Length: 123
Ligand code: FES
Figure 1 (cartoon, protein in one colour):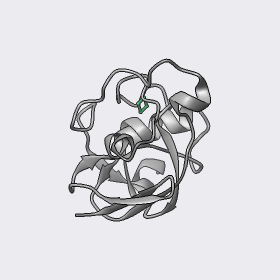
Figure 2 (cartoon, helix red, strand yellow; figure 1 turned 90 degrees about the vertical axis):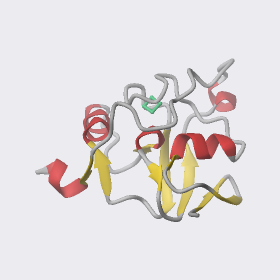
Figure 3 (spheres, protein in one colour; figure 1 turned 180 degrees about the vertical axis):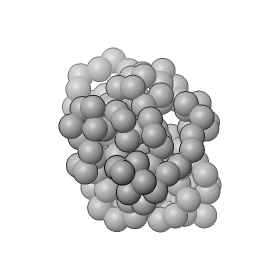
Figure 4 (cartoon, protein in one colour; figure 1 turned 120 degrees about the vertical axis):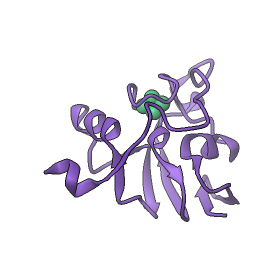
């Protein structure tokens, strides 16, 4: 099982688990205000290690639209299939003053995910 390091702790997560859900399971109240559909960017994270080299088209389009490409990734669009370390969870219930983190994301990536090499999306 891959390891996820976030907020000073490392845990094993089942391979294929959505990163946003794994972060939540680690006890971090990460935002997911659109319910995990690559629409809101409140699930954005910065990687310390293990940033995936692939991306869904939905993630690519949202990050470029918001001028976040190259700085952040959308945790709702990533699955844990290798070891990852998160440097920053940008928006949490606590740091945003929200009463909740948003609608619960489904177990699998939505919209239905096809992962492309990032260079292919940039082309
Ligand atoms: S973009 Fe909204 S939860 Fe990921």
